[in-house]
Image (spheres, helix red, strand yellow):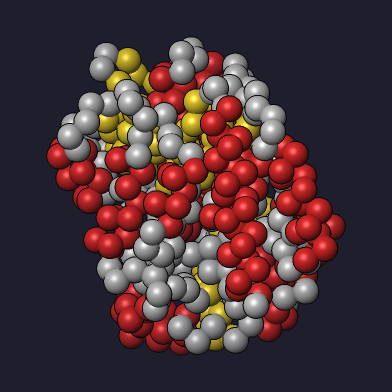
Length: 435
């Protein structure tokens, strides 16, 4: 009965959302991909909102329900039938009136076949951004392989309105091939590939942020933002492209990004206890993103240790890695792949969860000191152990999936100012506190 009622609510909301979209006169900008969707969307919002009235998904509300709730401008009723009754009335009322935003900025989350069909049947984009395609959502009932993931996500391109623009990260092989063969005009590419329309080069990162160069035709732009990791260039570049498309002076966009902050849990720098520094990537984890995060940890360790005086102790690099969920039959192989990357990036490894233990076992096999590898079942058990061992100027990377891992609990325990957790950490709402 519960699933039946959920389907009824979804159908009602979809009908109301379609009715409201028929009245919408602005542009729809849609972001999809396997990773970085919310960060990319927020960077685009920061830039476009300087000159346009922009409305966007709240946080990562990118599912079937999330898209409909955004369009109808209502929150979720979660599991309360009474709350949903009231919200359906409010949704019906809102559907009678036009959304006067100039740009509707939407995140399209896809984790099983036909999800994109549903989303694009409600809101077809004028501009679509595809961030990347990675092996995620591979559990039973989801996707068989990365090609199936690409097939579903690429439907957003075919749903573009007439004269629509498709923005693709062509450093992703599947998207590179797609850009070459897409039959419609309006494809804009970005990446480090020399053929890219917006060429990314010379990314450098520190604890203060990232800077890199974008070259577009004969224009060269130096991009700087207070976000950590060279790979954040893939998050920030679509914002520059959207500024160009919508006629925002590029210098204005560049100035805006110097103040841009990532959403919680996306490699944010947080002050830890005993003078340590936390790189909080606790929102979620997938193999390619964890590899990039480990590279950041490695590079930051080199960067902060440059110029140490004789006798000064190098900063310790700590990797706290949880299970990576929804990897299906490839889970063992992909966790072991991360283990092979860990030894060169971290001086100490703490794992949380059964699959994450595989990371530690492979790291040991690669020569990591057994006295530096520790296994735990839960985030709180790991925190109880580690907070007694934190040293001054430790750099602590925290990265793991959300369901049954919840490494934001670990971060909260080692924050210098846990009273700031509500604004700095993910999943701090009451509904999550109960889980």
